[in-house]
Image 1 (cartoon, rainbow, N blue to C red):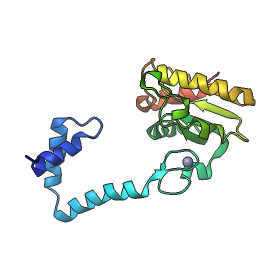
Image 2 (cartoon, rainbow, N blue to C red):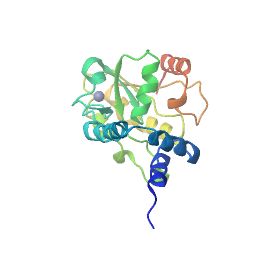
Image 3 (cartoon, rainbow, N blue to C red):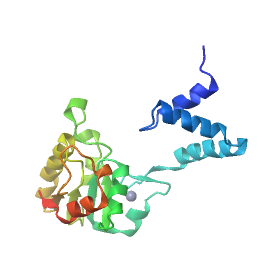
Image 4 (cartoon, rainbow, N blue to C red):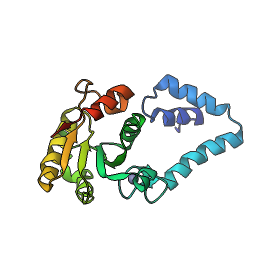
Length: 193
Ligand SMILES: [Zn+2]
């Protein structure tokens, strides 16, 4: 027996991060309150984003251009390395960082079988000419630390400074959820690896 349309819609919303049954149902009823035109625009925005948005060919974040606005306009001598595109927003909120980013799309995690070759590390190594400093802004957890150490071992021998955010936030917390002031301090007080 197939799912009815309402249950199917609720199930779709439940696939979103942080959305439980109750919230999914609220979203589904909100959609049912849309006019047909609004519903079509809503669905079209999802499909449109999916079709037009891809990874920046330099840093790996989401963009609808070849090269994202940050890569196109900012100081390329300093690269801030993050695990996921959403981490860029957190660092940008501090207003403190004027360089460019590099998105790894993951961190090294041996338990999950993710090695250095499975994330965008060789792409980072390929864009280091003219770079003075690489700031590693992965989360202060096992995978984030392992990745930072690996990057320092690869990059320092090239004569490039490698630093790590000085987290005032506790181990296991994520940069995505750190407040602006904490991140601002973490960036300013960064430690050379
Ligand atoms: Zn970019």
